[in-house]
Length: 294
Image 1 (cartoon, rainbow, N blue to C red):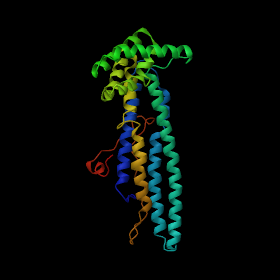
Image 2: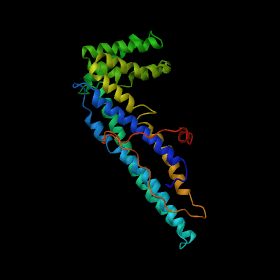
Image 3: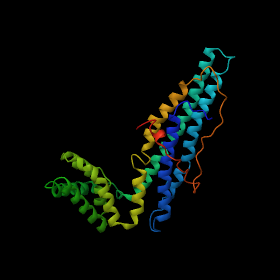
Image 4: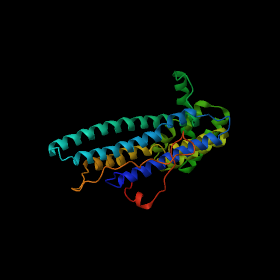
């Protein structure tokens, strides 16, 4: 039976498998369904490729720590102080490995989100000089005049109309200001209509899709990658909460006086159809998910 001092290891396995499946499926769908004129986003796929195996290695590191603690705790030739020192050393080595792995994965996630976003949202024209700043100031004044008389959803609808016009007319600076900068959200908060911010992002996405049909697949990919529950931002919760609890549980675990035989590993995930994208999601059970709620 595999070393498993706490069901949190099973929860970690299930949650990371869900994330791998979600991201891998979205990347494969984009590769398969995007039109030839759409950005290839090959670098996003390349950046993601090592992540599933890295998540496997994190799991392996935790399992190995548990096995090593079991071996040290079961060694009757060591004093209690010697066992404690060895276990502390094992924990420090494992923690260093986990920090290295999670930092690399988070850096890759940040790169992926940046690349996917740049493929969807208008980029700021260059150069960013005094002349452009003067034009931006004039644009913001004009936008305030257009939006100030409007309330709530009417303001969102007007932003959509102005963005669609900018995209259609090739007005890159106006499109960047309305779709990619912080100005629309800052404006809504300043007018105390912040609750409508929840509708602003998806409305902007739909406007971009309508005005630039070739961007539809890229928008769908970015939505998945940036989704707080199903996308890459979930890594923060997985690492800072779930993995932290798994590590603490394993490090403080001690065997009973009847020592079990050191286990063999049985933790690998099934192989996906496309080996470049990761692993398929194992069956999800209520008992696994009831262990921990995020």
